[in-house]
Length: 278
Image (tube, rainbow, N blue to C red; front, side):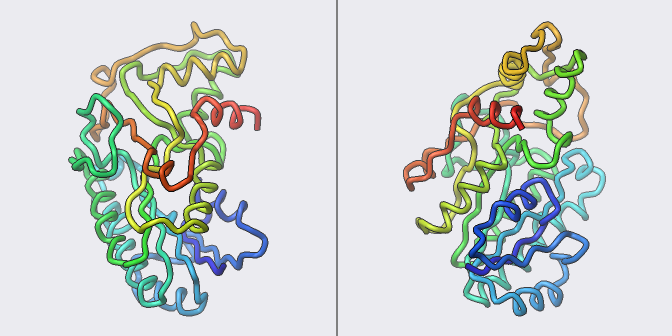
C-alpha cells in the first residue's frame, strides 16, 4: 500500500509512520515539508507519491490559541483538509482525517454517537467540524474522531503531565467533572490500519479507547499503576479554571460503530497501563 502521510512529526503522525507495515511505501511529510493549505504543493506531492491512501495528521491543536488566532486554526483544520480531500479524490485514493470530541457541546449524559448533532462552542471546535465536512468531499474517506489523545512524544498530553507529576511526588490539579473517553495513539494507529484493511463503509467513526471516566478517575488509576500517593491529586471543577476557549464538560464518545465493523479498541485502563510502562 502506498501512503502519503501529513503531520508526520506530530503526536499521532509520528506513531503512524513508525508503525507502518514494512511492506508499505510511506511518503511522510512534516508541516514544514508540506503546507497543506497550498493547493499546488499538495497536488504535486500527491501526484508524485501516487498514494492508495492519504492520511492527514496535520492540525492546529492549540484550543485556546485558536480563540486568538482563528485564521490559522481554520486554515489548518479546514482549508488544508479541503485541499487534501480534493487531491485524494483526483488520485482515486482513500482519505483519512482525524477530528475531535470538541465538535459537541458537552451537554449529553451518555456517550455521543456519530449521528448525534454537533454543536461546537469555540473557534477550534468549529474549525474541526468544518474540516469533517470538507473531508467528505473525497468520496472514499474516513473521518475519525479522537479524544484526549495520549502517547507518542512524551510530556505533551494531559496524561503525561499527570504521570510526570505523580512520579516526582508533586501535586497535580485534575478535573473531577470532565467526562472523557481517552485515545491512546498506539491504539488509534492500529485502528486506522484495521479500517484500511477491512474497508467498512466510508464515513465518520469515533476512535477512542473503550470505557468512560473523568480526568480524576484516570489520574487515580495512574496513581495506582505508579504506586503513587493519590492524595497528590487535587480535584478541580471546570468552572473554577479560567480558559479562553470553552471545553465540553461531558465529551465521552461511543466507539460501538467501529466495534460493529470488527475493530474493537482496548479499555482505557489497559491503554493507560501500557503507556505508563513505556
